[in-house]
Length: 321
Image (cartoon, rainbow, N blue to C red):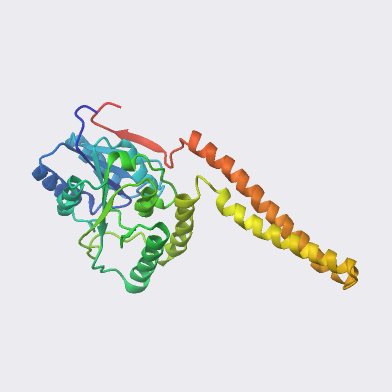
């Protein structure tokens, strides 16, 4: 781009025709008061309503608006990844496009960035969501993620965060891992702080989330723990399991053999126990082999992984690529 912006605001939209223009107006007002070079990066994540046309209209009238139209609905993580890749600012702030995040709170994030933090994460301290569908699953997931990652924050799930560019651009995002960015980044020794943000009932449009995502969050927790602790050394998780199974099988097999030669048991009557011992040994070897293959795959992943989790249909930019 021409003049490098200090601040990039990344907002994914999916069927948010009722919220786009109000969010844009509020963002403009706040950012002009900050008085630092900025850009707005709006991502249309395969919307089926008027969202694409509204975003393209904003691009036509405002040189600080850039729009990325994805070919289909890839999900929030992929849409954010597209925005992060396109962002040229030193500081990148992501937020939702449904008006549940207040642009007026952006200066609070920048204050903490100026204090030296690498990630400033929003905390919906007083949540107004449905108790059963949102609050309980969210609190459970946040507690588990905090314990698994060692990152002491209360709200991993909110999109409203500020990042130093070099931090967020160094992460590979796919699946639904955007909510766990602080945990993924924690392994790199970055500094994170949490600030309370306003949480309001969605006023326009329809929520895209419900109880059905609990299962996804649970499996994402397992994925994130693996990525944090074992992605570069998978043999350390598969190896011990393989050793335990192989040792147990070998011990049982040797015990049966010794007892047989001592005349304490009939081998014909203990063929089931012998087969069980052999099965344990084979399972152990299988775990160890899987760990070795995972080690090789891990090395390949780190060396050649360049695939992006989205496909751009059209990119509207006022700068030069």
